[in-house]
Length: 178
Ligand code: SF4
Image (cartoon, rainbow, N blue to C red; front, side, top):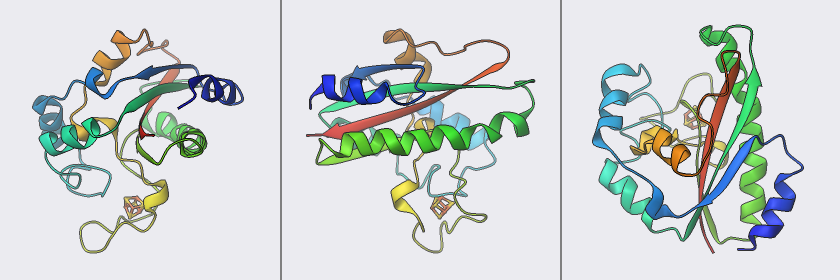
């Protein structure tokens, strides 16, 4: 993995902050999964949300099988960050950028696992659990669905978690195997 090449390519995209990480830097917590289970209406309704990806321990082992990682953010301006409809509407641009960044890593790596934001919204109605995912190439499970504590990861790498009252900060995490 030539990080300098990736860094040069990243500059062409509206990425706010980024950092190369090690899989060992990730903190996995059952409590994160508990919040999905008890507070998120998407729990058990999408291939991108728990429990579709297995237990937190299975997710941890999957992540540890990669040799390196990369976290990045994009930001979007909104008039009211509490307006979920307005906030979520900005997410599709982040997902598009995530696909581009994924492709950069695929140019250098054998295997790339991509985790991103919220529940997948590629289809009007998710095929889960009756049929396989219709678009596995652009379905990115939510980072939290793996039980990963994103705030901890961001803090450790100097990445701003909140950028202000009128800016939504979106995160994606890539794990790669060279
Ligand atoms: S791409 Fe479609 S089938 Fe796959 S997780 Fe997303 S909504 Fe579900």
